[in-house]
Image (cartoon, rainbow, N blue to C red; front, side, top):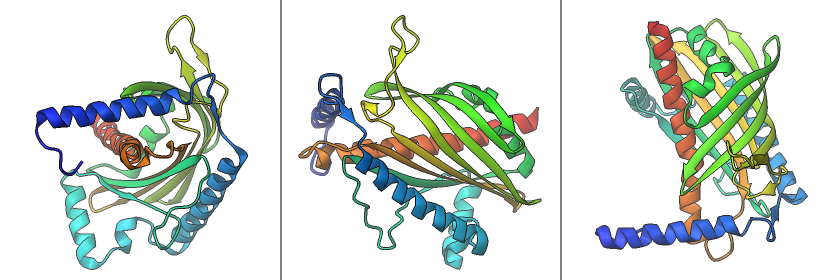
Amino acid sequence: MTGFHGKGRTAKVTGLIVFLALTWAVEARPGNLFSLQQTTIQAFTKYVLKTEAQNAESLGQGPFLWLDGLSPQGRTELIAKLGSGEVEMRRLSVNKDGGSIDVPGGMIHDWEGIIFIPRVKIDKVLNVLEDYDHQAIYYAPDVAQSRIESRDGNQFQVFLRFRRQKIVTVVMDTEHIVTYYRDSPFRAHSRSSAIKIAQVEDPGGPQEREKVPGEDDGYLWRMETWWRLEERDGGVYVQNQVVTLTRDIPTGLAWLIEPFINKIPKETLEFTLQATRKAVLNNASN
């Protein structure tokens, strides 16, 4: 918001963002429904397939962690930041030039983050990530409910109720298939895919109900997740990439709302990584 300074002007700008964001949400409500279209799904599927190919390549040929693909100086600087407790984030694109993919009616958000958890072993981190029955504790308030619905070896089917407050409060009931892979005694990775995402109306109230997936406000239509863990340097590096699909922003409002809306996936991932470190360290001390 270059050019706006002072509390009065900041409040006016914030008020304008709130008004426009609420307008964006209202446009999607019954009577003016914004449905998930097949062309949007196809574009997202294409993006995910390219992401899968890139991940398979780096798992096979490296680098396993993105920090190992940096220059020596960049790697040293990043390791120092992570060692001091910072969360490092970057926005990704499957296009080599960093350009965006055309997604008719939708927006793809692709973020990756990494942290370092000192003085723990990789199994301690896996214990937290696989403990879905308690993730509503570890990741509160973003996760309101959690449970394992079924397990077959290293594959889980889990239920997570997400709750996110940003101008408006949005609640999503989601189901995920998560598979864990042990690459070595010191490395592991996982792949999670949301098989159901349903926005909840009146959560916790007498009229609570799930909207038909894809026929809702479009805050979250698809979610794909990749975790990587490596134990070294006296702790565990934890890397997480999340690719999500939301509805598009109305023509004419993108210049103002898009930067605001794009903050939500980044902030959510950053919170997830911070909460993971906290849960692992708390469990390790017990």
